Amino acid sequence: MLKRLWILPILAILAIAVVAAACGDDNGESTATATPPGATGTPRATATPAASPTGPAATATPAPTATPAATATPAAGAGEIVVTAQAMAFDTNSIEVTAGQPFTIRVNNKDTAVHNLHIYTQKGGTSIAVTDPQAVSPGSTGTLTTTITQPGEYYFQCDFHPEQMNGTLTVK
Ligand SMILES: [Cu+2]
Image 1 (cartoon, rainbow, N blue to C red):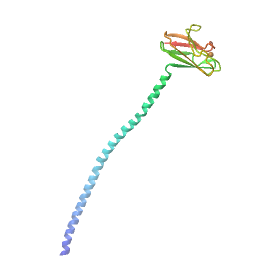
Image 2: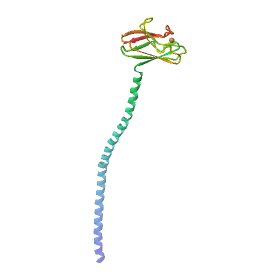
Image 3: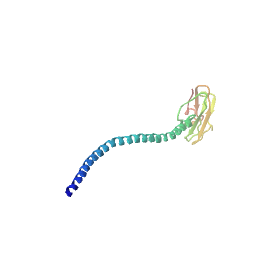
Image 4: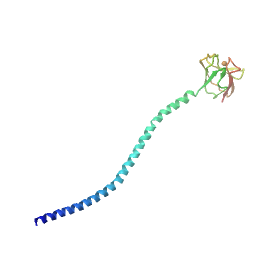
């Protein structure tokens, strides 16, 4: 009788344990399955937008650095016209400037002869302006700065080689 009395509670405990284990497994599986989609989806969505703002902010920083460089380039070349003298010739026979605005012509003498650039009202006309110095030595530069208020076509030449080196200065 004693042995049977011991067995009953043990069987009951085992039965309860099996049911509890079964329920526990079901709860564990259902809970585990439901949690991942909700939990995983939310953090990922939050993480993506957080990373994106960081990227554009870092890209925007180098942009301001590029702006000053671009602004400096046009400002330096705005009022100056460069003309090269080489092989007894100017590299252009046409220069255009704006009426009433000061302009500078820089003559780079890359030749072995002396040159200059002289502006006249017309060929054989009245002098308006000439480079400083008036005789630009080989390998050096001369500059001419003036303002012409009257629009029209003017004449420029090298006084040392007027037939080979000349052109038209247009004032608009
Ligand atoms: Cu010349």
